[in-house]
Length: 76
Image 1 (cartoon, rainbow, N blue to C red):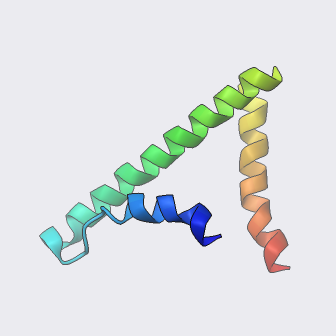
Image 2: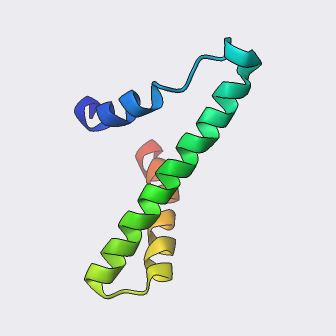
């Protein structure tokens, strides 16, 4: 799992610590990174929907449902 998560750890490591600018730079950096990941997932879902010939809204709802259910499944 470490090798799969390593690129994300490196990308998110560029967010500055809370001590810089009173935490505002960290706050906005986190928002920008979250928006970037959301955009990336959206583009991947759109590409998969196009390849599988499924409406992109249905695939997006399915991916969101899986993303919210998987942690509960692992915890049980």
